[in-house]
Image (cartoon, rainbow, N blue to C red; front, side, top):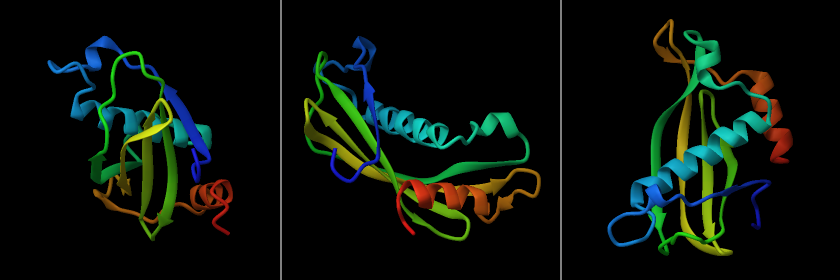
Length: 138
């Protein structure tokens, strides 16, 4: 998957299908979430619950453009990459392919959030550095 340094396989489960026999639209967001969590874990960042109630990333926005139906039995892969890091947020792009063809693409904006102060907080320098090194942003 060109341009994506982090790619994971996804197994399409029967429960992912809707009455028309293809993956339900909401499941594409679950696939992108699976890719996003795998991306962060791959870089060594704990899931938000492990540091509760201090700091974590929370979802501020997500979008998905559906390009092609995904069917049971297809080989699905999700590519995830960080394309922008701002003061307290970052943008993650994702691409979902089925049998090597584009099925959906989109992005999410995550905000680094301080649950104690109940406000956005700067992305920690160590997190920023790891992502920039992985994505070869520097």
